[in-house]
Figure 1: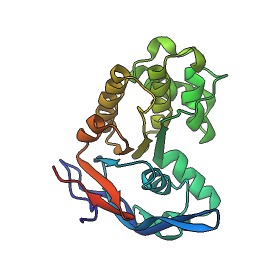
Figure 2: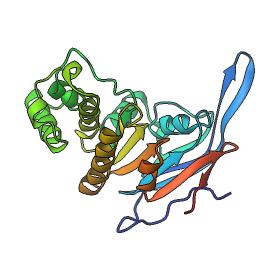
Figure 3: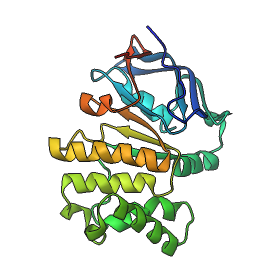
Figure 4: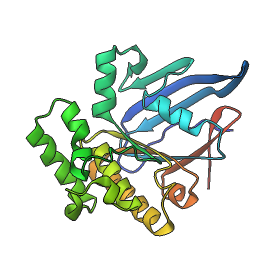
Length: 239
C-alpha cells in the first residue's frame, strides 16, 4: 500500500492542502464503525485527483473533511500551512465560501430561482454587490455554455444544464480547490462526457485543483492521480 502523497504535476508544484493522520468513525446503533484510519493526503495547486472505489469505503466522508463540511475525530487539515479546524466560525465560513468550490451528485440548486440567481449566490453571500455578483455569475455561466439559459428557472433545465449551473456556482468566486462528489452520477453518457471535458478545461483555465469522488472510471482515467481507500487508508492506484 502506498499513501497518496502529492508530487509535482506539470508546471504545478505549490502545496495547497495537506491532510495528516485523519481518523473518522461513526456510531451505528451503538456499534463503532471506523471509516478513515490515518489518512494522509497532499494536494498541489492545479492538479487533478480521482478517488474511486466501492460505496461505503469513506470517499465522500474524506471529501467532506477536505472541504471542512465535516470534522475528523482526529488529525489535521492544513491549508497553505494553517490548520483549518482551528479557524473561528467566521473565518471557516469565509474559507469554505472563497477558497473551496463544491459540486455534488445532487446539485442542490434552488428551484425557485433562475440559473443566474443560483450561480451568483456564493458571490452575494461573500458581500459582493448585487451588480458585481450578477456580472461574475453571468461570465462563468456563459463559459460553461449557458448563455441562452441565464433567466431560466433551474426546474426548466435538463440534468446536464443543471449540473453546469452547479459547476458555475462552485467557480463564481474563482476558488483554488474544486471538490466534486459524483458530479455526473445522475447524468446519461452524453451529458457525463460533456461535464468530464468541462471539468478538465476549467481546471486548466482557472488553475483550480480538482478532487473528484467517482465511480466513473472514464472520468477517473482523465485525472493525473487516482486513489482508493483500503482498510481506512488512502492508497494510490498505479497504471
